[in-house]
Amino acid sequence: MWFSRGIVKFMTVALRGIRNVIVVVIVALVGGAGGYWWGTREVKLALDKQLKLEVINRLAPEQYQNVDFSLFWEVWAKLENDYLDSDKLKPDQMVYGAISGMTASLQDPYTVFLPPKQNQQAKEDLNGEFGGVGIQLGYIKRQLAVMAPLEGHPAKQAGVRAGDLIIHIKDADKGVDQDTGGLSLPEAVTLIRGKKGTKVTLTLVHEKEEQPVEIEMVRDTITIPSVEVEFGKMANGKWQIDKDKGSIAWLKLHRFGENTDSEWLKAMEEIVAQRNKIKDSAGVILDLRDNPGGYLAGSVFVGSEFIKDGVIVQQQGKTATETFSVNRRGKLIDVPVVVLVNKGSASASEITAGALRDRLGVKLVGEKTFGKGTVQTAEDLRNGAGIHITVARWLLPGGSRIPDDGLEPAVAVEDDKETTDRDEQLEKAVEVLMQ
Image (cartoon, rainbow, N blue to C red):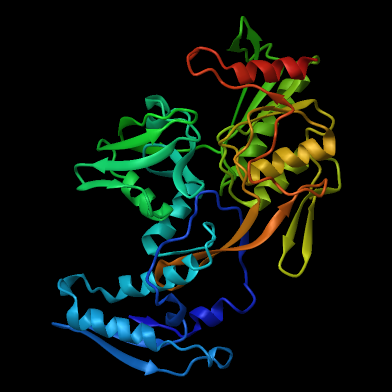
């Protein structure tokens, strides 16, 4: 396998053709200490009976001539000569671990190198279909945590909640029985996902509770639509769908992914048709609960549906600040709107909610959001690997950053877990909308 000496050099040149992507579920992989070296060498690796290494070019790029990588070679040689289980000395994995160590040294949980399998999983998240239990993962104070359980999937049905800390993962079929301390997010994703019909058990600590609980789930095929819309009204504390007379559009935006724009436009057609049919339509409830984010372009696209013109968000980078403004004429300009948020609302969701709050005075109803105010670029590398790099912070239209502890709702209300037949947050959002 060939690895070009351009990996480190690659990180110093202009990023070409990449899309800004707000990555909610990525954390740094823990790798080998030799990560600083690998990108400046070109090597040829081969496995015979023993691990063999042939150095093709020892010349580092000019800007790295003063970096000493002799320690890396010393450790590699000692592993090759002395490590007991020589079958475990796999060159590609050692290289991936070294590069991962380089990104992990930055101590930024959102700047990460992704080996091919983990890179593919990250793409599946945005594409919206994979096998698993239906949870979006993140970190709370460096502890693996549930950002959002997905509606209608095994985790949500089993009682998993946004903000749950995941302290242990068990899967008899995979031979997995381990604590999550030091576990990277891609590694956790690999352990939790699996074939439909197989079981995985998570040990969780619910928010504001001390005693851990074990929850066993049966995996299923996870298919996630970006957008759903229902028309109805609240009656006796319950949402009632009414396609004929429903005066409220409950617009549920689950993520900002590959298909969000097209699905959103279809929902807009339905809303416009309903508003034309019902002249006294009350407005729209934009539900961003448990939406972990996705592409920046999606948040600008959605924000432009409601905001007539001007700034939606600013990207404060290393040397300059870039402004993203309304880029199209929306169909819901001047339509009354309330935004629902909770702990699972992150990244692009927070940008959208913050823009509507700052620009239109829209009220946020629910709970504090997740609190992720940085932006990552994502790019594919050779052999199916990928890299996500934190390149900027987000500034809302009012000039403020997204706080680390999230956006504060104007109307705070928690969802009562004991009342499974009621949605107190939705109920309050309807009340606010009708005022």
